[in-house]
Image 1 (spheres, rainbow, N blue to C red):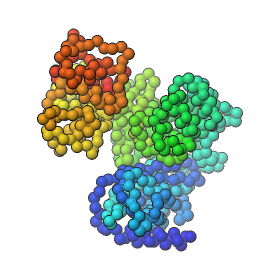
Image 2 (image 1 turned 45 degrees about the vertical axis):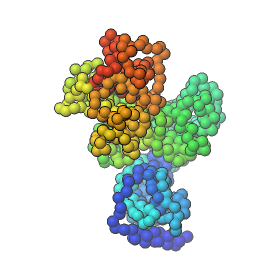
Image 3 (image 1 turned 180 degrees about the vertical axis):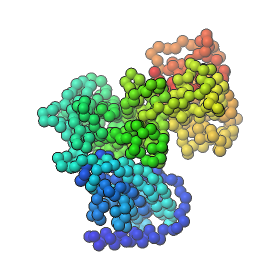
Image 4 (image 1 turned 30 degrees about the vertical axis):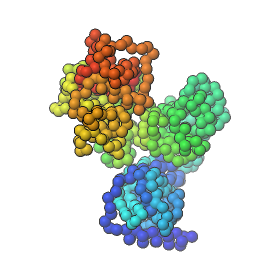
Length: 574
């Protein structure tokens, strides 16, 4: 068998040698790494899954994974590579690289077999832990071949972290128990299923929710939110929490009795929306696994360390369905609450969340909101991965000119939604153009679609506003004028601002009205017919309001401060 594998490896290696030395330029694929466990003990086997999005007709690839050779066994029998891709063969080549902390694996299709496109799991590398420490697996380089002998090379440099601590003696290496102490039954109320659990020697709390107890909790549920609470001793400070939830009962109750399932621990609170359980892959899964791991900033990629304070706490969130990672989250399928204590002089509206992106750079999560009473910041992540709370102390020198709008403007600046004009000035009472407002609106809600194309005759493809205007046109937020223009450089009227907000709110599913109908504006008759419904809806939702004497001034021009306020109100109602 070993001879056969060696022969296949040699064959693929020979194929690699034939790859052209000059490779064509192609759209950059989005590569991600996930591990079967982010906290392990000596003796554990850990699988590193390599996944790619935006693959285009891939018929062959070579991937290069680096690791800390001092923490893992590096014998030829200790490291393996597996793939579920069909109609081809794979192998590890150059196993002599193991001792230097490098795995090179290759795959190629047989004959004329069709290539792989879209989101593809390239394979998994399996290693065995041999020493305590923290390691970051890094996908350094990948070469891919497409039908027609086209080749490309990329350097993703994406990573994922594993912490190894303790020995496997007396520990099952990630096994679950719902009742760590004998006879310690969970507490079930009409809103909560509480499980007491202690961390093991590696600082891991692992809980598997029992089918019968989950059903009891659902049957007893009074509201539409089931909260699974993991309680530990006050002295116990876990570094990782893992919980497994059987899905059949949740699916049966989702959308009717259950709207959300929350998992609350000393590390974080994660609420899973019914939309997640309605996914096609969730309908076929038996169990959902959630892990939250607390790390310090030293575990971050080098690119992020320079931008993060040394005492920053990082949280790694991983969701899986039957151990298959969920990498992308959509439409608020999950919301997360992290603890954050304001330091002296800090203000809650400047507390934000950052995600560590695939390239190691921190990216602001614009939907994060701080709850000062609870001392937590809540956000809806769009990916599994690493997140942290931080204080973005951004302001402008001239906000005293519109003090009523200071908090809104600073909050949007902290989220990289608005910038100043020059020399630390925001010009809050200055007027803004239709293009500027659309850019703010699209940026706040991360709507930018790189494939969108604008047909407006007054929008230049190389202009800074083009992606935002094109996106807004594609979504139906703007539709332009009869002469084919958008009026990108014209000042925006208050009624047009309301129309764009109203259309965006419907697209985003943010429509909602206050209990009491709002009194009509004194100049209601002056509002154009095309804008009347939008102005009324935005007024009822508390997003727009009048000026002095209950006048709306529909033809009046909106200021930069006014635009910042209405966008913030729509993003963070209440």
